[in-house]
Image 1: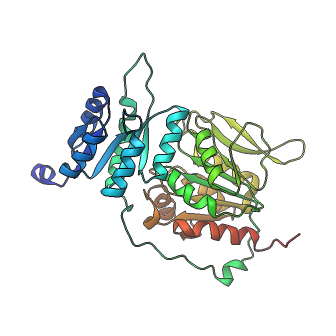
Image 2: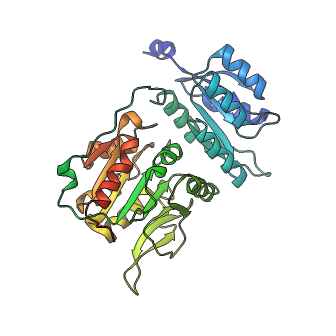
Image 3: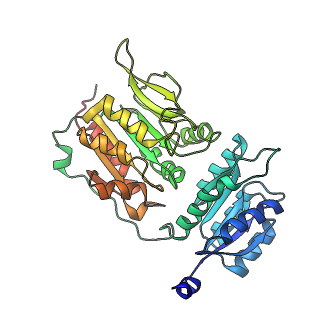
Amino acid sequence: MSCDLENAVRTRVLIVDDSAFMRTAIARMVASERDMQVVGTACGARDALQKIVSLDPDVVTLDVEMPGMDGLGVLRHIMTEFPRPVIMVSAATEKDAQTTFAALGAGAFDYVPKQLSPASLEIGHIRTELIAKIRSAAHSHQSRAARKSPQSISDSELSSPSPTPAIVAIGVSTGGPRALEQILPRFPANLPVPILIVQHMPAGFTRSFAQRLSTLSSIKVCEAAHRELIRPGVIYVAPAGLHMHVVSRLSDAKPVFNLNRRPEHAEHMPSVDVMMNSVAQVFGDRAVGVIMTGMGSDGLDGMTSIFREGGLTIGQDEASCAVYGMPRACAERGILRRVLSLPDIPSHIVHAVLRRRKPA
């Protein structure tokens, strides 16, 4: 058995960072995994591009900020000349967040934030996330050329007796930024319901992410604020480090956000489960829950709540997921009323929302 493990094909990783400390630290993390191999390190753009050609790594980790050609420039060369999964390693600052999202738009598989302070160079906190994302990138379906063709929506679905949806709740994690950038522009400007999004992100990223999405979408996208009234035709992104609860305002029963850190023991903050459970409680069978690409099972309980209330539950299919984790958990529990490829999700929601509404 040990011989089989030793002889098994391992994921070949190239580490690119201008910091010798970071190259060494990341290399040690990767090399400690039995299914991974560090095939080389590079300190700059030219070195990185040459080693990609000579070493042919399966996955590249790439620093966002480097002297000369920055990480974004290197990424564009990689994706143009020899495409493969690239994971950006980014500091959690607003400037780095903007560059990171540009990198995701240019083809990066995902990113890992390094939150370093001048007083500490400890980066062990990124180990779990980094290793998981390298493993996911190596096994991703990103390079699969064949995708499912768009599904038409049947007359029976359009004439369904279920109530017209009043809110859409989306939960997403690994691979989510690119997925959201693809689907949000497909929603019409006159969408008469709000869309709530929980995307697992570190502090410092969600506001920049919302601003980026707003430039791509015909619908206003903003970071949710505490006690803010939830308005139709607006997309709200949960702020990092806080749970996004939906509650009914006591004065007039209109829905507002309650942002707080409860429950503190949740694996993720913000949590998809917390947001979706509150949406199910306030909106019942008029809620739409959408679970998309991501590792783990956050959203399983929340999607279950929406399903039990009679709401519409949609899961992204395996073929279009960067990581088929969160949707898989919901599919295996049997709570998805629809399983759709990523491009089909917006049209299905729009048909469900507009099918009974008459023009003013």
